[in-house]
Amino acid sequence: MAPHPETSQELEHRRARLRERLTSVGDLRPGSLVGRYRKCGKPGCHCAQPGARGHGPSWSLTQAVGGKTVTTIIPAGPAVARTEVQIAEYRRFRRLARAFIAVSAQLCDAQRRAPGAAAPAAAQKGGSRRPSRWTSPARSTP
Image 1 (cartoon, one colour):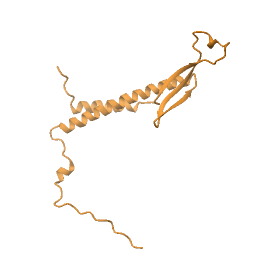
Image 2: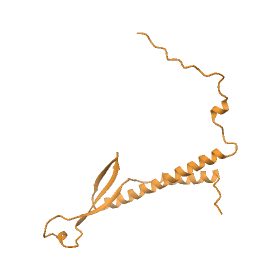
Image 3: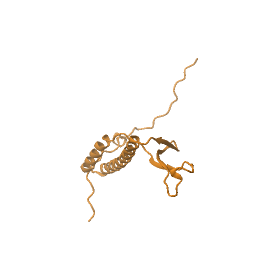
Image 4: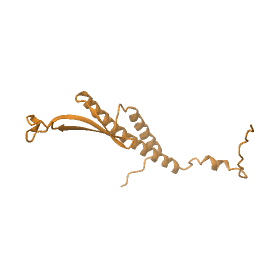
């Protein structure tokens, strides 16, 4: 059995709940956080041993800005944890925004299909008897 379509009232309620959740969004930032390990190249270093991961991780945030990829170094420690939370919050914001748009579009469609939906203002006015003529603005003479 197919689920029943939501009523306008149910859609308005869902939209209101999403709006409340959107207002609770905290600090956010787009991008990806990557931890990289590097080998220094010194033959006597622990990173030169077979199977060693290398030095690190060194953390970088990569994001698209104006059509270009921008990488920002994130210092190890609390900044990494903060950045992970900000990226997660950005992803949550995107999910909420997509859901809000979808519900709003469904609500607009439901209102349009509702019996007795308001007609556009131009259709209610009846229009004018003849079309108006365009005139250019008066020019001032020097």
